[in-house]
Image 1 (tube, rainbow, N blue to C red):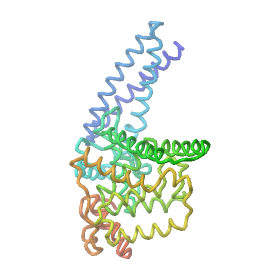
Image 2: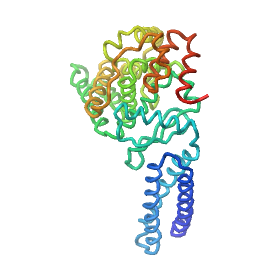
Image 3: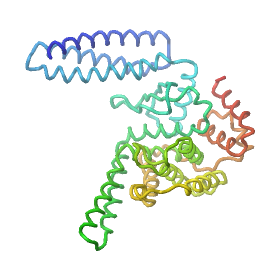
Image 4: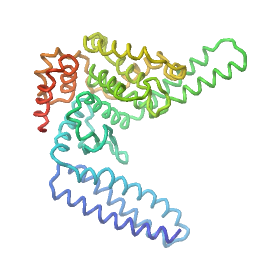
Length: 382
């Protein structure tokens, strides 16, 4: 073991030196990510101190367990730095930097004022790393390279920003967990007289349903609500697209994510009454319900995602956004008519762009080429 730790320390020293040189190269390129570079360089200084501690511990047999633990931590830090940050900084071209501008503007408009910079990587599906070592100020935002062509997925950007909110305000998760626990406690208390074996079976079913709602699934539902809260009614169409473009049964519960049927429902229930009654939303919702009615709703789905719980998840998430993000404006206006949507194509606001683009593609798809051309002009893309 001492030989391994000594070898690993030498490898870490080489990695630290390479990382310093790469960050210096990024400085020389005058990238606008100076705040990110400040934090990465500070982290490297801390990592260098950790390495010195490892080298000292190796000289004391009784302290080798400390060296082993520190090696594990340092290995994770350097891997994260290389895979997510240095790899992303190597990719910073015109389109990544333009998306950075738009995403920063959007983050601040929807009240995520703690975000100081965003590292954009156009090399995978929409996702986000909302924090690094408890620093929430510079998330890494992933999107596919053709994101500017996919207006149907634009509301997904607001879903990803929801992850930043949950990461910043961990109390949101605790509140949702408590709400779910209270719901299933109520279900237990509602049990009437029955045979002991039946009671045991029913209690086991309730326990399974309660345990289904782990942190990951609750966070995903919250982020769906956050997208409807901040981006408005068009998020429902985006969620329907997410489901219908996927071959998975929307009522399936054997996935790490909540069922698509639940995600679409909370997205719809998070809208204001005025939004729900809007022509475009009511049509999308009606079409979705007709399609879903042709599918079989399993008993597992009914047990894990009962209507009352799903409705409460939507309502409680809206309450938590208002509580922990009072500066986040709620998008409560129905989408504009198609002729006005065309005129809004050049508005440099991703919420307006998503609203206008989805209105055009839904109601007047023959004008979509005209809309997307204006959107690309706004982005500065070709």
